[in-house]
Image (cartoon, rainbow, N blue to C red; front, side, top):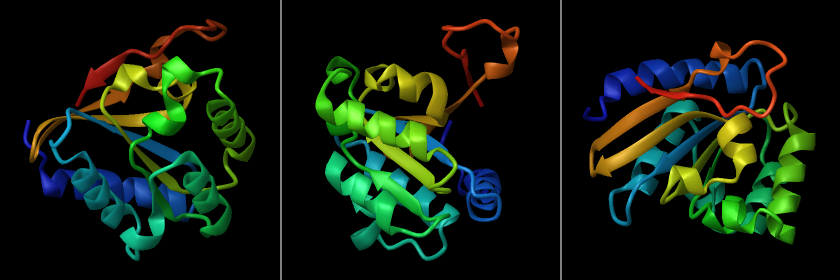
Length: 171
């Protein structure tokens, strides 16, 4: 499926309403090989959900910079964590950085009220906290201008069933 600007604008306008008016957090994962324009798609989505998005001020390339964005930008602002492998990589789940980032998101949930766009080469390399609880949309970029959108089917599990990862379906 090619990335359709009209569909993205329609769907992400709902995201914009959730993060600006209702102060929700919404995390989007963008994955793909090097050079397929993950960052370009991230900026494109950011401009849909945050009409005053400023790449110079709202993109972070390290966990420390991302945490700084969370603490300094007003509610409802979109933030891009480019090269999220430095902050949310599953093979470093016990590292001090990953623990601090995860704890911050667990405790700040609902207080940052923004759209978090996280770029990483492989979806399954995201820490399980992100894969199973925070990411609400996942774009797998196949090549420049072509991506597959997946959304979690969390409602398919009976209540009380703990420890089950969501099933991801293609939109």
